[in-house]
Every structure is written in C-alpha cells, then in structure tokens.
Length: 333
Image (cartoon, rainbow, N blue to C red; front, side, top):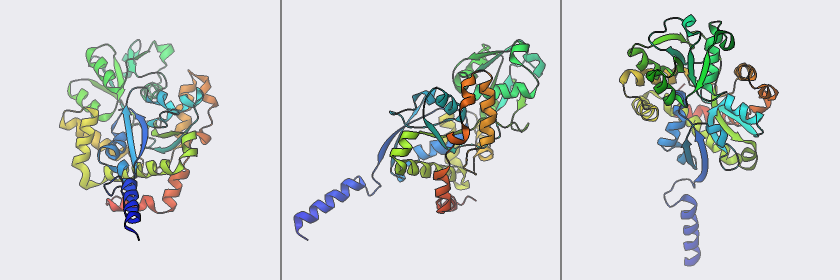
C-alpha cells in the first residue's frame, strides 16, 4: 500500500476513534431533574463514563420542568412518566422506553413537628412541584390513602419548586407537609418532623420515572437511541454492583446534596429497593397516575398509554443477551 494511502487510512481511523481508541462520540442533548436516588443509574452513566463508552456524548442538563424542554432541540430526557403524559396531552410526540424505578412509590409524607396525625392535615398546605409532577401525584396518592379529599378538607397544594425547594419550604414553615424521598426524609425525621406515611410500606403503586425520547429522534436515530438505552442499562448494573457501593454513595450524596451519613445510607438503600430490574414500563402504574392527573386535567385521559410505552429496544437487548451480559459483568443477578 502506498505511503500516502496508508497515511489517509490511519488519519481516517484516528478521526473515527476520536484519537483515543474510544468509540466515536455522538452528542445528544438530555434533560433530567433531581428527584430521588432512583436516578442514580443515569448519574453514574454520565459521571463515570458509561455513556461515553457506548459512543454517547451526553449533554445532560438538570433543571426543573425538564419535560417541557423535550422536543427537536432536546430529544432525550429522564423524567417522570406522568410528565411525559402531560407532554403528549399538550401535543408532544414522545415514547417511554426504560423506567428507572419500579412501580412502588418509595416516598414518605413528612409533616411539621406539630402535625401528628393525618387528620391534622385538614386546612393545611402541602408543598409540591408543578401540577402533574411526581410530587403532586404522590401527595394526592397519600391523601387518598388516608381518605382525605383536598377540596372537601381544605387542603391546599402550593407549588414551591423542586425537591430541594420543597424541603426548604417545609423547614421554613411556608408549607405544612411534603412528600420526599427517604434519604431527605431521614434527615427531617432526625430534626423532629413527623412521618405520616411511608408510601412504600403502604404498598402504594404510582409514579415511575423513565428514559423518554421524542418519536422523531427514535425514528431517525434508532442506533443512537439503542446505545443510550444500553448505557443506561449498564448504569443499572454499575449502580447495583456491591463493589461499587462507595462510589455510588458518593455520587448520590453529591447529586442530591445530602450531607449526613444517615441520609446517604437511606438514599442508597432506597436505590437498591426501587431499582427497576424488570426494565419494562408498567401499564398498570401508568394508568393509575393517569387517573389521578385526569381528575384535574381531563386531556390526559385521552393519552393511549399502551402507545406511549415502547419496550422494543429493551426486548431486543434482552433477547440478544446484552442485558444479561452487562449485569453479569458487574456481578449483579
């Protein structure tokens, strides 16, 4: 082979591999939010190079109302499935591919120290995120569990922002109760706040979060979407591997801004309990949350959840043995 030709071949190979021997990277804008430790597989995939390993330059932005950004410019997000339903009701064309948590709600309803019983919530304020978000739905599910009705019992929902803002509002007394993930709840209970309901112990089924993509992106770049799903599946394996416990704890603490060992321990154990090892969306859980949102926004009731969920890539990776291989490589069953 002539020297010039050999040079061009080498140059092309270096360009393809990014000059490092790594897979060529495809930049993909993504959005998400900080809700609970179930999102840890996403965080480790980003922070510990798993997206890059599968050729994805994940431009991950963490922001409130992340689902509203989904569209042509930002085709991928890890958001609440109810938020995806709202997006579809508003005209977005989305698909739910891979839940990051199982169907049991692991949140806890935490109230101000003076509130000792569920009945004491009558006439009080519950801090949530925007209407239809996971915090709002879980708060409604908790009230329904107690037989409380917001309209009848004078319970007001106050939109105070994301999980951190909700915690700050409760501590400052601007709201009387919020639903929060167990890691934060442990810190509040240590300060004397009241645990009114552990939704997981009560076996409440509800909100899941998931990898959500625009239908256009899935149709035009199925190869890229498959690599994103593969990287996130490896994120599950990495996060659940016993040998990675310390680094996962550190990732959770940093991403969730948890400062006490007890809070980090609770959040990590919540991850182990809630991680979605089945990898498939639950149509039953989706319909439960759809009915809750539909009480206030009837448009959501027209969303066809069986069309919103698309498990084709997960089934392909499962049938090919990729899922089993990834889990086995980390020693996870």
